[in-house]
Image (cartoon, rainbow, N blue to C red):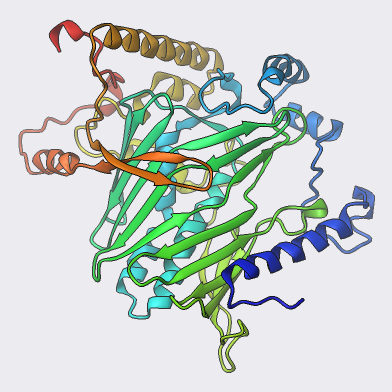
Amino acid sequence: MAPNPKDPKQSGGFFASMASTLTNLGSAMTKSVNGIMGYEGLEVINPDGGQEDLEDEARKGRWKQEDRDGYWKIMQKYIGSDVTSMVTLPVLIFEPMTMLQKMAEIMEYSHLLDLADECEDPYMRSVYVASFFISVYFAFQRTWKPFNPILGETYEMVNHGGVSFLSEQVSHHPPMSAGHAENEHFIYDITSKVKTKFLGNSLDIYPVGRTRLTLKRDGVEFELAPPPTKVNNLIFGRTWVDSPGDMVLTNLTTGDKVVLYFQPCGWFGSGRYEVDGYVYNSAEDPKILMTGKWNESMSYQPCDSEGEPLPGTELKEVWRVADVPENDKFQYTHFAHKINSFDTAPKKLLASDSRLRPDRYALEQGDLSKAGFEKSSLEERQRAEKKNRLEKGHEFTPRWFDKTDEVFKTTWDDMEVYRYNGKYTEHRAAIDNSDSVEAIDVKSIEFNPWQYEDLATA
């Protein structure tokens, strides 16, 4: 049956069936057939992992055989469980970045939001915003795990496209983070929470969070519903990430919608990275088709009511991934390095900032032993602080975000919403406008997210 692009639900199903056909076509083939069948340039993915993948990973120094065997004995009892915060993980699988910093990676291509705010065409505005949200998936394909933030930990970023970014760990159980970014064109707010399901050698990650974006010129507001993510070959084989399913971007002001289907990866890499879909008006008529790969580029073309390209139009590129460093140890982009550096830190950096974590810094310097020790020390200190706080009857209160009464419902779970309270803007303005701020070596600041360490004086 031909796809009906007038139905956002069917358009996703159409792209899904195409991916399924390609997957079934290649499922019985082997690596030796790769060149014969003309699959050069496609990455061969073995969904079940294998000894060859394992040996390749060991050569990289990531997982040695004894590491995998030992960790499997620990993890197998958690099969079927949500392991978001119940498992202590070895530092050798971490990258020198926290989840609060990773939240900021979406700002790499923030210029797309500037273009959206300046755009007169409401449908092209949706193209820019959708491309912005797709762009971060290039960074999400890294398989190193970020550090879990300490309760009260923060991350600040300035000096990038006029954007001021702040994130804070607002809850420990369940782990939740809140973020706020702003420049002259847009306001970005997120309450981030995930739900997971450990399946043995893979992990399903469900995005139980709320993302809102406001374009300042006309006050247009968007809401994002991203697809789930699957981490494959988590313990055995070469680890890789896929995010099959629909991304839905809704214009809450006009009712327009973008539905993009992320195709699942099959054998011989068929379908991997591919994204296809449409921009719809409020009556669910397709107006612009979008296509591309989330690890490469996105393009668009005006279409008719049947989803076919309009005569006299051509496919135009709207976003392309920037050049990346070659042979980078953690597969970082240039922007990821920028996030980790103090070049993007503001004057008088908060002592709770992720850059100052001793375990993160030790891992960045390649000292796994020290990183593991510092990570354990921070976790022990966090447990002690919680015990102290509860004994005194105190409740943790985030500094820069307020908990609201709003409960946001997603496909996978409900979630409490945290809202930016504006105090950081006042805090930063006071510092930036002061002539008395002493120049200090930010690297000398001791990491201190603790709000209730000494409750006797609280």
